[in-house]
Image 1 (cartoon, chains in turn purple, orange):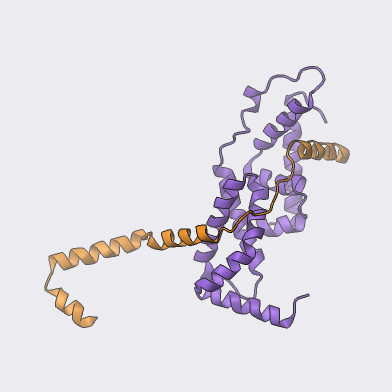
Image 2 (cartoon, rainbow over the protein chains, first blue to last red; image 1 turned 45 degrees about the vertical axis):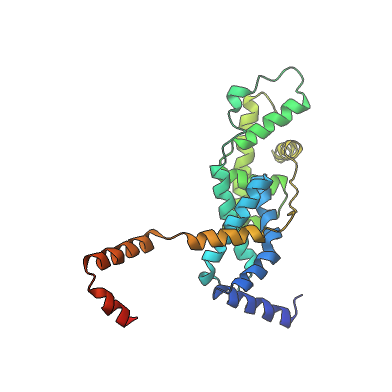
Length: 181
Length: 71
């Protein structure tokens, strides 16, 4: 539980940041950079890309400072912006795992683990960015649905629906490769 | 159906392990560079304004003393 002094300090810091105080921005950056990076890297699964996206997210945060409501939680606001940046990065990232139908040979007899993992990775890489983001956070990173929903600005039911659709698409792709779970 | 979903989740988790979410190092120096670049970049509105003012001064140099007086 936060003390009244801590709540006051956070609100004051938020006010200074919204007014354009660079020192306040630096304090917020240093406090939240790890959290923002951690969230982005879970989505894009590439550390270099995640570092670039973290800088881009904080740049957008800095530009939008006048719209920040100091009564709100900075971390949640930052995560929402970071999610948008990560989504843009996912869309821009070439689908290096794509081309499943062309590149992957038919499954030989008993499916070898390496072949299976490769097929799953490729199938996952073919998911649309929106579904990949939700599936990544829910299935692999096991983040709570409520947190994913808040970061995406959608309902928990919508998150569950996206994860469900991802699984259906994955199943379809894997079936085409004669992989049946 | 549910167990089938769990099996797919298991396959995904086996193929794509969770990433290490820890940040190594401080990104503030890079952020400072980004802020400097951002401030140095001029928006197209600013460029057009600057161009218009420059063109005005070249076309009507007599306004320079008036402008200086206003400053």
